[in-house]
Length: 98
Image (cartoon, rainbow, N blue to C red; front, side):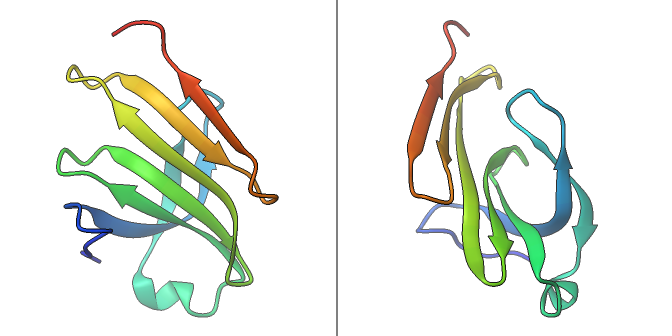
C-alpha cells in the first residue's frame, strides 16, 4: 500500500511483529491492508525512498502503543532513533559515528 506520510515520500506497509534487539528493528510477517481491518494488534511501518524503515507505530485496539522514528547517515547506517512509549515518554538515541 503506497501512501504519502506528512508530505514525505514514503511507503506504508503493515506487519504482524518485529524481530531483533538492535536498532532499527526489522518488521516481519507482512500483512495486506485488508488483513489489518480485523486485527487487534499490528505494526504500521514507514519506508523511505531507499526502502529503509524510517519508523513504525505499534497499534493495539486502534491506539498507538509504541512509535519508533529513524534517521540514517548518508552511508545508510542508523544515525538517530526516537522512541515514544505508551505514556508519551520520548527517548532519543544517537549513534557516535557514521
